[in-house]
Amino acid sequence: VYTTCGEEMPALLDTIFKLANERGLDLDFHVDENGNEVSKGILHISEAAIRNNFKGKVVCGHCCSLAAQSPAELVRIFKTAREAGVCVVSLPIVNEWLQNRDVRGLCTPTRRGVTTLKELDDAGVPVCLASDNTRDQFYGYGDLDMLEIFREGCRIG
Image: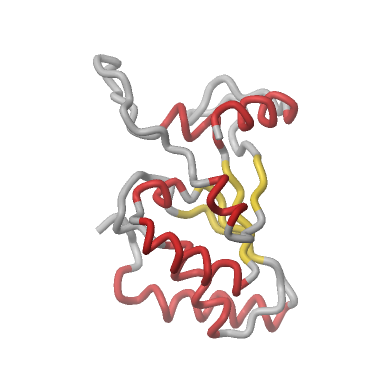
């Protein structure tokens, strides 16, 4: 559910990490961009980084589903991400816009779609703010203004 990898995920991630290790590459994943508790891509990625003794940098963008995790599960995920050296990049404006949105415009979104920025930081997991949308089909208002991202990220997060 909520993934295209299923039971193959560990093997697929091992392949990615093996190839990146061999080539000296860093990795950037867009992951868990939903509000579903079962989406734990950051955990699987962190475990794969540890399992493969990955030496490069690992970035996990979005991670919105962290907001749907239980406190105990957050502790486990944060511990693993910190050990793996994963950095989480929040995309607060676009995720506020997209997550839990009623495409018909009849209802106000009730879930925010922003990852657990303060909790990640408190747990020692590096966090950053960014945007990956510039007037595209996902967010038609993006204009590469990082000051706006910072300002609104501080307000939202």
